[in-house]
Length: 441
Ligand SMILES: Nc1ncnc2c1ncn2[C@@H]1O[C@H](COP(=O)(O)OP(=O)(O)OP(=O)(O)O)[C@@H](O)[C@H]1O
Ligand SMILES: [Mg+2]
Image 1 (cartoon, helix red, strand yellow):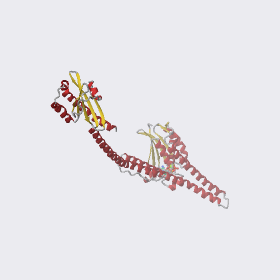
Image 2 (image 1 turned 90 degrees about the horizontal axis):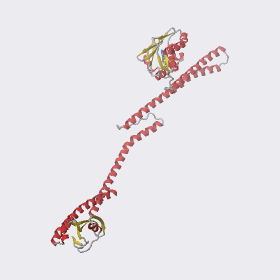
Image 3 (image 1 turned 60 degrees about the vertical axis):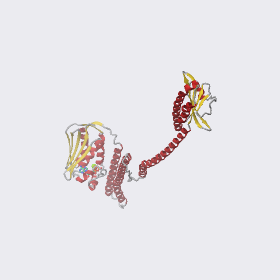
Image 4 (image 1 turned 120 degrees about the vertical axis):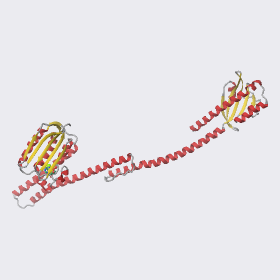
């Protein structure tokens, strides 16, 4: 409605301006005749009536006493006019007004003074119908209504279509999330578009794949743990049942069986200790109690601790310290990692074997090399030895009491220090483990 009023006002202003110009033209034409009272019929015809027809307005001229001297329609000649506009014009002001008459409809009155020698001698009143402006504005308004109606329908259709296009991938994502939440980790989002949604979908799919991996690892881990715990428990059960079922009491058999039970209990205890260590390493990966430590002294301490165990198998345990190396490490944890590797070297080396522990620097790294001339590891098994519960020779490991957790613990500790662990091994020749720790940490 405001637009309608604005358009109407613009038209009215235009009409008013042009009417003032026309009224001034008439005022100019009549001023001498009005002053001299000489108005011939011919002059009236040409100057007023014809012009009135031409501009489509009624022209009325009054003298300074408000008396109508000229009327293009003739009917008011001699009457006295006191319209506001004429009164104003006779005071020297241009004036205008809009009226709505029952008979003639909407009309605009324009009035200007007639001036001769700086004196107001009368006024011109132009009466113009503005019905056509109303019709015009109404017409424009109807067109506007039609255009805005069509535009709204078009916008609604576009919004509807786009909403479908935009919401579909979001809906797909939501449905997949719901399925994943219910445990279907094999579900993937399938978005064909090539925009940000695709990137989100890809990131989401990667996340589910990772989750699936972690979930499988967890299942494997639980299965392995149960298996490892069950084996000693089964032994204990068999041993204790056979003791219970013995009718006679043979002290030696009892002692022998109880020694076996005791060693199975030790085994259970070791497995549980290792498992707890791994769980703690998972939890505290980033909370290392790092202190500047001389690795030389740490290795001396470890080797003297392991020597008695090596001696039992007549294995020579040598320590070669080439230089003093200081490094920031969690001493307790690092000691455990190195012990696990030396413990393997002793475990998997025949009696009379040799083990060398060597420390040296190489390109901003401290290297701890642990060499043995033991059974060695087949090349195809090397990639797996750091996995939890992995053992190359399960039968032999059982005799040596291994669970397959020692190296995974060592690996966790060394990598959490920003280091790496590598192996070189040859079956029947021996193995070399390299622990590589960054010097500047
Ligand atoms: N120095 C080595 N020589 C030969 N084989 C080795 C050596 N170190 C490790 N292995 C092989 O790698 C496997 C994994 O070692 P890891 O220390 O993780 O387990 P484990 O020694 O069997 O048991 P745990 O250390 O948990 O008591 C071992 O079972 C063994 O087969
Ligand atoms: Mg081990």
